[in-house]
Image 1 (cartoon, rainbow, N blue to C red):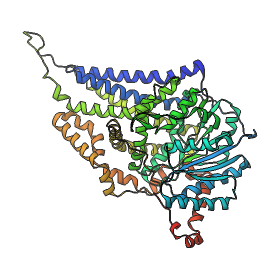
Image 2 (image 1 turned 180 degrees about the horizontal axis):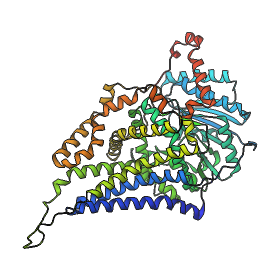
Image 3 (image 1 turned 60 degrees about the horizontal axis):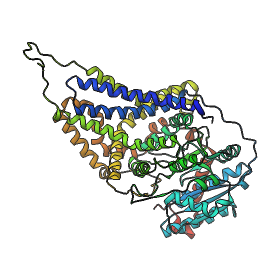
Image 4 (image 1 turned 90 degrees about the horizontal axis):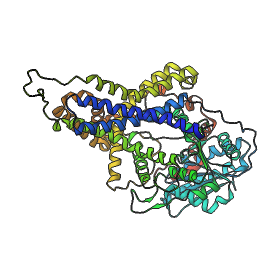
Length: 597
């Protein structure tokens, strides 16, 4: 990739930030004009500020998409013939995962690396933080089987920590302290990661070609989604995310992102720079840093190392949550970790862009609250509104009615809606014009899928807004969400399970609609797109967790399904072979089915 540098980097960042600021300020001013029609009060000013900040946040996201679409990205140099000199450790931290699933991914990655002819340069280390002794015994069994099948004695390692201090970050740090000196680079994965060997080799070549490159991040694509929700997220990650990632790449300079997995780090740089602090006080704002990846990227940049995301690197995959509840559970941890960055954003000698990235991460969870506060303030506004005075002058014969500013309110609503849908529609149009749509089923299907995804995300957005709002308030109230285990595999939920998880959202939606009907009946129509999904949230959550029919499978087509990478195919074959191995089930009946913790 060729990110901008120097003055041109400042120009690129300003080209994204200034229009977003202008849109936010314009939205606030437009709302003030609308509010002034019947007399401006303090609540109107508060609402103008809230909608200004919220619109600014939406515009900032839209500008990143537009920059990714229309910005010029230099092609990466060709390092395919460059020899690899250093040694790389492929690290897979795991904690309470299904061993057969996990080790089949390791086997597929190892086979893909071997296929490059460069296997001698790579070792694989499985770093277990599993707390359950029985599950750990199964991990050992499947590791021994993996090593025997792959013939990888001396190149594959398994160790289990007795105390999982620092969670995943502490797990990686423990490896670097004990074994890092034996390696030049480390590829950090998650338990659900898959990467092609050719991609891994290309990452090493790029890092060896640039001695100041401390971390190289790929853009993982979601694979193997089955539910309606999972397939929609999978499509968005494959179709939209590369465009937004290109926009981020153009602005990154030397301070790119680290998303915690599917990234290559220079061991010496990481070990010297990324010692994480234990924050004073108790969680959620104290203790070990949860969103450690952002902090590690900032520490690398502070030490003078370049951190970069290269969206052109294909062959990087992960799995995603299959339902809204699992997504919200994971998002709760991210929320706590990002808000925890408020303790770190002022750390000495951090780069300005690193601080800005921390601010973005905090706003990602605070900004939705501004929308909710705006809606609440709009509903209760009549309680604070004075009766209009149609005879402001003494002895006035004819009344003066306030001007009709409805057009400004409609223009504002259309503008906000445009910020949400325009980038995605432009991405679909660009894909059709460039031929990229062929990989997603053709131009016609891409447009239909884009419209369906927009409709689905619009229905799910109010539900996600409520989960995020609860997460923020829990953190602010001092409630520690910890690091809950990921739930993988079938994520199907019953209507009863969905009701149990979201009944409070139903109550909130009903109360909000009733309050609007009693206090501001003219707002009821505008609140229906928000309140109705809340009231129907159990149905939305349950239905979206179920596997779709043939139309759903055909709509959300992604390249990993029509032309799956070899590493994906190999992982499926290996897992099928292991699942059908009768002699294993006979000798070890407790291993006959996947075990989840």
